[in-house]
Length: 499
Image 1 (spheres, rainbow, N blue to C red):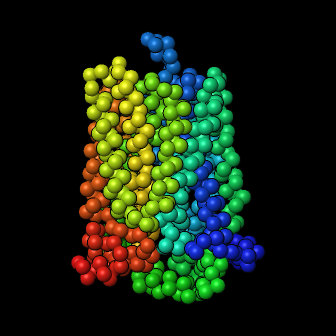
Image 2 (image 1 turned 90 degrees about the horizontal axis):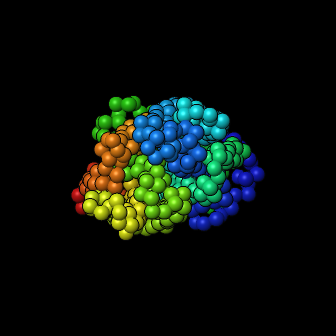
């Protein structure tokens, strides 16, 4: 058996029509790694709003006699880790191409443990920044690996729902972290933030223990010419179905690969139909970060704390509880309603929420009217839900489906590098947009991100294809047929005739 326990292959059983026990176990283990990523970012984004954290790593404001982290240090603390995120993407793509997906899964969790140790032992701002940068390298590796890994091992009929688990695990983990941070926020010493950070050790250790039960990607094995290993992995995942013949599916994959080079060149990304695929994936990656993601996540607790109408840690916990409905909605509906319908509907809601927040922040009584402040908080809590269903989870699915099989590693690295650059720009500039003595827009920042969200809706209508229910090979056919985005719903050949 190729790297997985043979006893599980022999005792693989059916869970649903498309899910076997081995596939479910693999998804849980991969999902735990995503849980670790979500938990880590949830903890680190929230503890920076804690008073003991500000006292340890910030400075005293002589006018208010309170500790705070200035805009520059706040920008560095949240944006500089994205540099290591980019390094993580590059390292993951190289190791993933040479040694396989499982090697990357092991690496990312070892990096996570290292970064957590640096954060936990931090005594000054510089060490905390270094620790967060190492943890974010883990996030970059994770982001490159998981959506693609899941897309390569799950059946096309449920790929949208299964890949959406990426977003759900992330948000569920952030919700669990908010319960812990809310409980410890009442402490007045460093244990306030150290206890949540210590909990970050748990999940990467669990993943490392479960890695032997996760199969290698059959598509990667096939690209490396390891036909027999690919057959074994396909059988490990799918032999719960008595009619399933792993050799037949492996042969189909081999035929699909034989139509092009085993490994495409960088220049191929912009040739023929691959140019369209690359532009769609790159645009999706950009819109995912330029539509308010950093406002909702990295700076969410700090923003709510500044409004001063409710406890920011309780608000964060409630917000993340609501957020869990987003990925659940995608998992339940994306393969029924389709990617385009889900995206266009909820992206419009996201744009509207941001515009309303900006309008409320423009009123003359915003500093004194409690009702207006509550309205701003309400929009700040609703926006992340609409964002997740549209720019978040749905675009994660689209990105994972855009690369051609011969260009998957290169395409994925381009998409995530684009995402990282855009995330860096948004995250670095946001403290200066929000706070005095700089732009001091505060709630009016909603006008900026609301506008980019509206542009995202227009992009989705004209350029985002419908991939629901299509295998990766059928998606290849769709692009070869040059079907316009608004006609890509349903059968490939029917769409081509309509065109």
